[in-house]
Image (cartoon, rainbow, N blue to C red; front, side, top):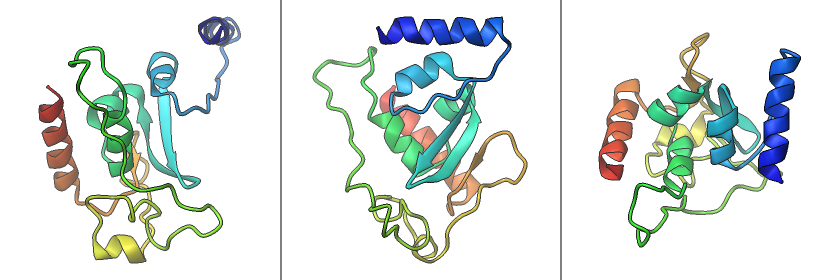
Length: 148
């Protein structure tokens, strides 16, 4: 049923030259049906960009966690999924600074104090993380190597 509905949405999108917003936790649906992706955590956008940029060049620790928790067809069935540690925050009492910092393995002192803004401003692929760009690239590349 889900596939039929998504196919209908895709046809309507083409027929009417319309934009469609899909809100989901299903990253398989996102990969198949979305051109642009906005990853949200605790009500804030933490990463946004074109589909390929997010799946093949993500730069936010929460996005990395989401991608690592997707079952893959090209891996051994006995390989366990890697869940994101900890629990999502209460949306009534969102932590100061980066809301993801209590669950983030790369959290620094600045993450606990300051809410990061989307960087780089005006770019097609942005993320809200205090890690240096070179560090994000290094971590992402290490994760890709581990999945291979």
